[in-house]
Amino acid sequence: MRALVTGGAGFIGSNLVDLLLDRGDEVVVLDDLSSGKEANLAGALERGAVLHRADIRDADAVNAVVAEAEPEVVFHLAAQIDVRVSVDRPAYDARTNVEGSVNVLEAARVAGARRFVFSSTGGAIYGETEEVPTPETHVAQPMAGYGTSKLCAEQYLGLYERLHGLSTVALRFGNVYGPRQDPHGEAGVIAIFCGKLATGGRPKVFGDGTQTRDYIYVGDLVEAIAAAGDADATGAINIGTEQETTILELIDALRAAGDVKEGEFEPEFAEARLGEIQRSCLKVSHAREVLGWEPKVDVREGVARTLASVPAPSA
Image 1 (cartoon, rainbow, N blue to C red):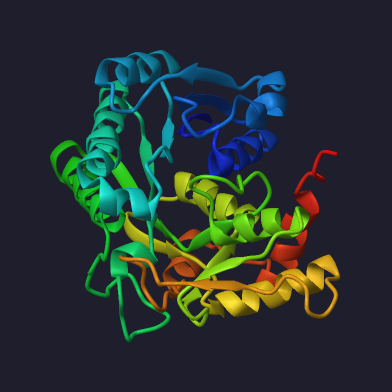
Image 2: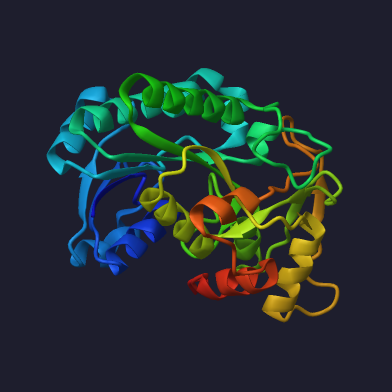
């Protein structure tokens, strides 16, 4: 299969590229390298993957890359992913996550792609909900621009199905973590905490630490993404674990994985951040049914694997 991966130099994208190459696919990557790293693709490029540097907000550049690649399946992962940025700069967030996604959709249509797989978000779309784990049928109530922009992009997927017959699917991810996630900038909390532990710092907890998330290991996630490329299912599909984990439980898991002494790696507490929700956990029975997929790595094992992958601090 010929595949194109936008955002393929990023944390999730590069793990997906490796999986696609492992199974024998031809892979083209489109990434502007604003947050992704060419180093993430070092092994993939040696194995035949091709990298094009382009911004998804530049429609002409996107069209040129996709037209040359002639992909059968487009995996669209490039995005603005920082919830705080989306609250502070909602128009910037929308230009990337809505306009950029439309550019990739249109280029895929023109190039004759068979399938379009979109990386969406679970908790940020559903918002605060009493139905936990939350199914895809739950009403969307985003609490930040990020969830709103992803939901809007999902509507364009439906439009391209109805108008042009392009087969599309939106995968609503839980909180993804694992090797290659950068502990700086837009990283998830597990990567940040791993970085703090590796350098002797303390984890900063916003709120009281009882807020929950559905943490999905990147190895499990990319298997779901690849399966979605092969499947015919359309609409929205949750990709998570159906397990809630608090921030304080994460810290305990890291202490265990790092063999931390009692009294060390104690959290620093700060005020809760605007736009963040208290509970998030995804129901994944639909993914089991239509993708034949289910998560394998529990959070304690995944945290241990992630910590082990963190480079030792330089002297």
